[in-house]
Image (tube, rainbow, N blue to C red; front, side, top):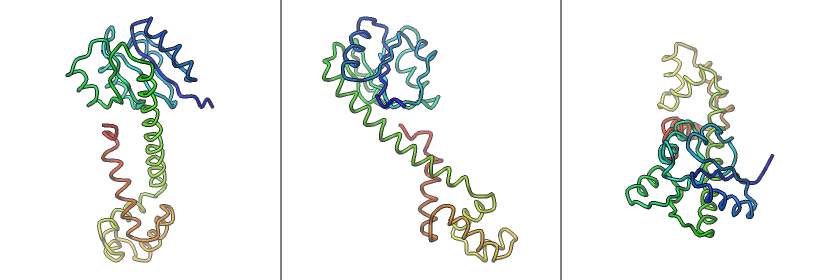
Amino acid sequence: MNSKPMVHIVDDDEAFRTSLLRLLRGHDFDVKTYASTGDFLLHRPSDRYGCILLDIRLPGPSGIELHAVLREQGVYLPVIFITGHAEVDTCVAAMKAGAVDYLEKPIEPEAILNAIGRALDRDGRERALRGARDALQSTFSSLSQRERQIFDLIIAGRLNKQIADDLGIAERTVKAQRASLMEKLGVKSAAGLGRFAEKIYTDKEKRADYFD
């Protein structure tokens, strides 16, 4: 597995792309370049650690529009917007869209490298968080349908006898199912179940806007 970060450059200025390509390869990055939004979408990046240097103004759909499409498609590589036509409104829109930075051409090499460093830091943190959330979801998915019902009722504050009445089953069955689900989730108390529920249900509700 290649451990080098992959930097994607999306810019219609061939000379600028070439200059960046040389700079970044000289600093041990893997680099791919694209001349337009369409070119980038035809060569959708793999899920590899890295970031995107994205020109705001491109032939066809703009950089802002491409960024929105990538988010809709679940591509969360951090974006550094670049432009030769700085506009306050555009800068604000870019940062609200979740950009790591907004750089105006001509750009000093140090500014580019510093921005990429911040983007890679973000990508590392977000990948770790997504991994932890996916692990929680996988663990929760291991519960049977009955265990999930009992889990939800425990979280709602119902006692074993009340759960048995709610589900029309024996209390001893509730106790057995409760012990089973707690073992699967790796918790030892009702408080632990509560903390797990807070994480899993918050994740389900907020995952869509997690990167806002």
